[in-house]
Image (tube, rainbow, N blue to C red; front, top):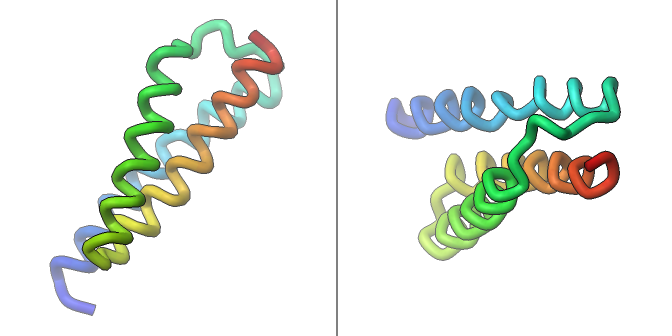
Length: 84
């Protein structure tokens, strides 16, 4: 793995797992009132599109990061619909 891929995976880890505290908070408090529906919807669509783009160009850091980020964003979105 070259330096560029290492940096890509490190950046992907940081930006992807930035959503984990929000999921934990939403799950434990059963409250998503502070989560913007517009923000999380656009984030989910955007990360899905980045995932597709990564697949088209074969960029594994992009694919991995956006697959996980999209899943986390969809989890927050599901909690938003469930708990308002």
